[in-house]
Length: 119
Length: 113
Image (tube, rainbow over all chains, first blue to last red; front, side, top):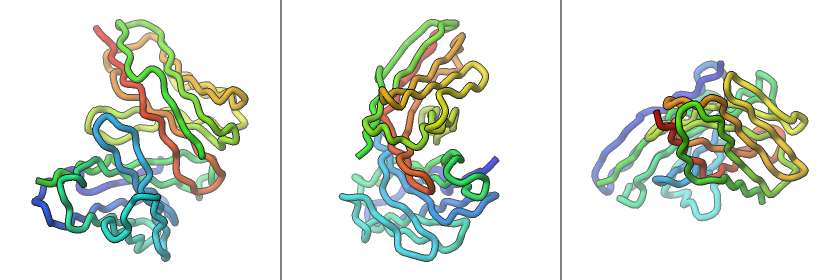
């Protein structure tokens, strides 16, 4: 079945560092990918929609200059947390749907997530 | 705007018990509903997907139902096992095509041996 791979799975870095997270669709093409954030014991909240070949769409309250999204190809989207601070520490997870396998009737497939800890 | 609510927030049951997790949504024009399992510190595992035209889906010991008119979905787990302990999330897709999911806060299930 369709698989979404996310890398890295865990990052610990100093405040002020920029961190890049990759999301890949392994056996299908994804013109759109979604980035979510999850704080401890909270649900997943949509951050932005990543669109191949065009600008990402950000949810209200999400700083686009802070969270840079690049959807460079049909199988790869990246999220860069720029100048990360401790309050950016969270679980980041991406998803995509294999539209080629039946369109909107297909489930969303999620990566394993990236746990970001900023010291 | 679609909102998804899950009750209870946490549930503890003895092994072998059948249980029901509840999910409600505000927009009855829901396109599909997906149930996920999340283990601590891990990503999401898709369990069941119910299309708006369907009333239920089954996979092994899991059965999910969807009632659009009442804005509810349930996840039934039969003969629960300690390995079922996890957080269960339901999420609704509002439109057809490639749109994001709206998640509930989840139900944290503990199955006691």
